[in-house]
Length: 176
Image (cartoon, rainbow, N blue to C red; front, side):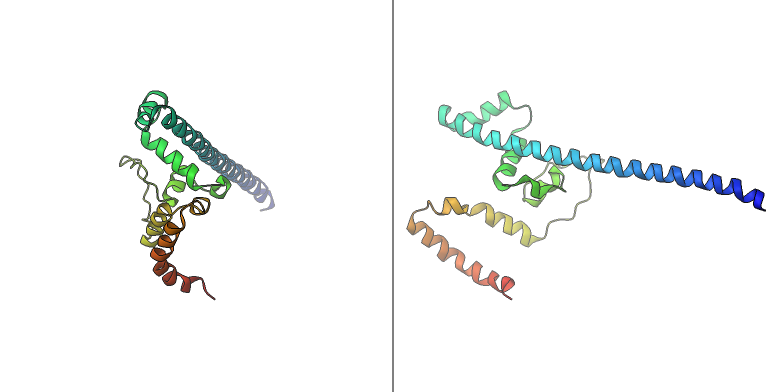
């Protein structure tokens, strides 16, 4: 029996070694994939920053109607893609907060529409709860803190008056 155990254990050790080698390959490939997804997200964010600056410049120099013409001539993707990049750049001040997300997931978390994939490519995604969708819409409609400070006093007062019922309803969620 001792003679038979030696080769059997060696064969199993070879299999264990190969299993572990393949597992390490999976881990390495997943790490590479996560880094590439994050790199794509960072690239989209930077493109969005530059597109926002360019849009401002084009509108200043050629008028508001010139922006879509400029995009059609100079930007290789759709105007919708440019919009998404710009929204990503506008709504995310620190892209590192999105480190574990794909570009598509980041868009969805920001409440941005994403292009539907073909039936073969479609990944089932649960719908965001309505309170998250509505909160994103509200945040998009509100001025940013630095913009709020620049509003006339009467406009600030109207915002405070209009938003007070929402604040009163929400504050119970944040009180101890």
